[in-house]
Image (cartoon, rainbow, N blue to C red; front, side, top):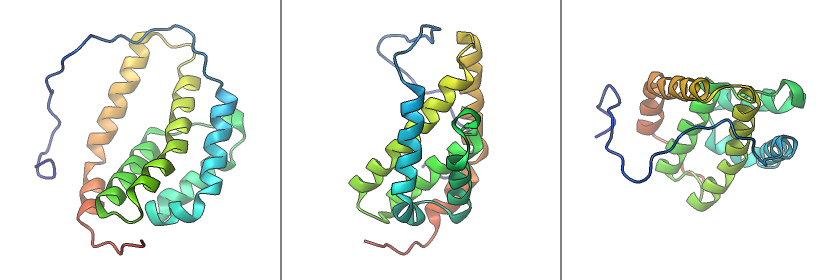
Length: 155
């Protein structure tokens, strides 16, 4: 059903409301970056099956950056998520392994978001989140293409 929809729609939510806050976090940015870097490096053979070759090249370029210059661009994050989603759909590798292989990317994106918004107000963080949502919408044709592709299953 989602393949044919053109725009996202508000969905009903339930449960407690949430708010972004500017409270400090106990997360260690250096450790998160290192877990991202080492995870991508160690998983490169598996990632070559999961990720589009161009996405993998960009990821490797990001991994090579010095920690102080590290940022996970929204467009690259969206392509990475979409590559993982379509690989899960096609079961290109064991799905449990695929989900585990995603963990370093989540850490990298979380680290990038925290660094970029260390001095941001909750409203600025919310605006950045909305821009990320717009990027997911913008790149939906990429997901459609990958979802519908004939993929050779490796395992």
